[in-house]
Image (cartoon, rainbow, N blue to C red; front, side):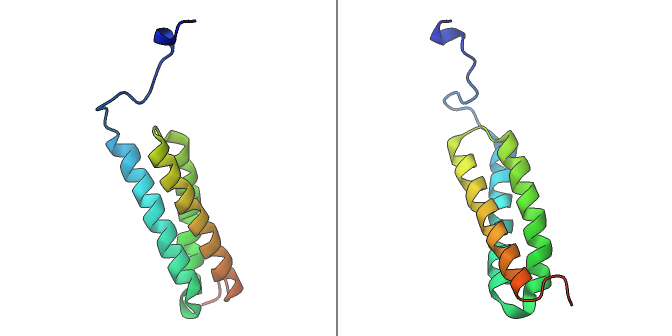
Length: 95
């Protein structure tokens, strides 16, 4: 199979507005979960936002098209995971 016959997803000057916005949203939601997980009084918000951000980041990782989007997704997923862990250690789903 010649290299020209291999389909490529990322051509120069090709934009991915949906994938970019998904990756940035996953990063921001993960950051929110991480920050609220570090604050003792906001553990409920951290767990709720973190679980949503974790699964949202996994979906965003599934449809990502570039390496930059994948990096942002992995950072967002990691921060969401840590935020959920911190939130659970501070009280979890109790209000």
